Length: 119
Image (tube, rainbow, N blue to C red; front, side, top):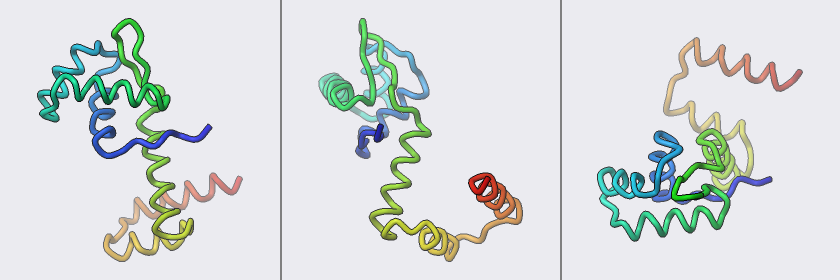
């Protein structure tokens, strides 16, 4: 199953949810007002929209995620690679490493990851 798209403002909401879940919808309203300066109606609208898309669920006024932070990050990364680099992961890595020098530890970690995918 493909991970549903989570837009920027929704992602900020999800960050709050992932940090506090399971959480009551009234507590989410308070957190979103505090952290995002949202009105109550905005929070409930986002809960409804994300529920319709299968990102979160709200049962008995308790909100939980159906998409994990890692799943959302993986989907966003894949979209960037597809959109900006025509799906080429090597091109993405080349562009990324032009601006950021990788440490020896990061290089070894990437090697281990690549080796594990080849097995």
